[in-house]
Amino acid sequence: MATSCATGHHDRHDVYAALCPCRDILALLANKWSALTIGALESGPLRFGELQRLLEGVSPKVLTQTLRRLEDSALLTRTIYPAVPLHVEYALTDLGRSAAEPLAGIRAWAEQNIDRFPA
Amino acid sequence: MATSCATGHHDRHDVYAALCPCRDILALLANKWSALTIGALESGPLRFGELQRLLEGVSPKVLTQTLRRLEDSALLTRTIYPAVPLHVEYALTDLGRSAAEPLAGIRAWAEQNIDRFPA
DNA sequence: CAGAATCCAATACGATACTG
DNA sequence: CAGTATCGTATTGGATTCTG
Image (cartoon, rainbow over all chains, first blue to last red):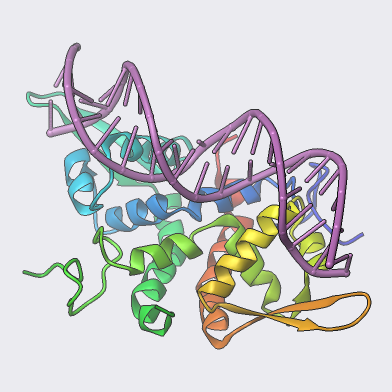
């Protein structure tokens, strides 16, 4: 059998396989706010408030959720600088920077092809 | 002002702008099932049942919803061949084929980088 | 075969108000 | 500043059963 990774001791990974963990990775990245967040951090670390301003319309709750998920998956780091007022910085990891490339492709495609869409 | 498209008579499109319609396009593509469906159709038209088998674990309801959404956005076409038993084919449009490229990048990244993720 | 119908669980999303 | 807490809506996802 050619299909992969459903058993755990797979040889190849396949997002089309229901049980392949890489499908979860796909679901993590194939998400509006993830794509925007990672893209925003591509040019350097940002603070919570800066992200909130860049990602127009995101609520603090959703932004927090998104950041936590990405942090748990090691796509970004959260660094606290003890100070008053509080200073927290989010930065992409190497893994996050690696993921940023294909995501940029999606964002760019959306911006460039919108005129080809039906009303 | 540099920011775009929020007013409707924009000059540029920007997925970071809350009201830019291209953010909806991003949301449409940045979705697990959309990415898998479009990828599956990349190598040629497929029938409902074939898609359902390829996209392991997808329910008929979700598959139908996904296909309808993509059809409404003109990323794919639905062709009915009157016959018994019924024969329906889904195929990418030019627009869909165009979107397939960046999406392939995401799928490939998920499959190739999964080992770099935390347990 | 291709899906529509139904029901339900999970989660994403959003607005607002409040706190260390 | 950087969130957390809370509440409510909406969308997604999933299982099952049924039908043109």
